[in-house]
Image (cartoon, rainbow, N blue to C red; front, side, top):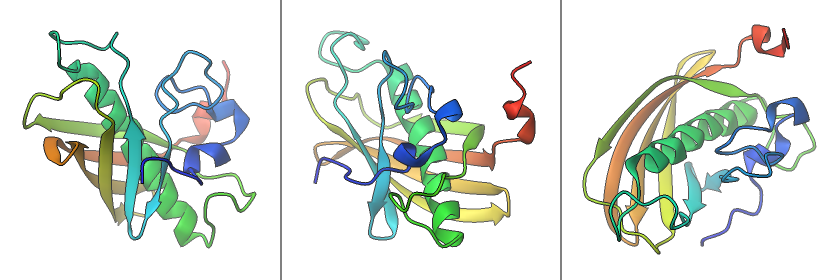
Amino acid sequence: MSKIVKAIQDDYPDDFSYCYGCGRLNENGHHFRTGWDGDQTVTFHKPHVAYTAIPGFVYGGLIASFIDCHGTGSASLALHRKNGYEPGDGVDAPRFVTASLEVKFIKPTPQNVTLKAIGSVEEIHPKKFKVHTKVFADDVCCAKAEVIAAVMPDTFNDKG
């Protein structure tokens, strides 16, 4: 599988769908989409050649961004499911922000390969989730990460 049919980002409220990584309304963004694959979360992305570190390899900042959005999307999926919903149910999904991001680069990430982030989610507080993620290029693990995602504070609704 290399395409997410029902992604949590499709259910984010419009006001919170402009993230450069995963915002469906950001014309210039990456449009990362995260969905369920059994009890794990999954996101796919084929980086554009513009995200080159050195010829043939992907820039690590893009990998961190990919993991970041996969983590917040995974937390949103988990809380949405806990609340009795799945992507595509027509209910606005909860929005998360990153409280912490720890990335360990295992191997250089090759270009011209669709990357696959696989996550497992654990609730550590009613408003915080820990997402363990591995990023694969083909069958090779290139990065491992831990994201702590927090429910977006109400103050983000202030356009101040």
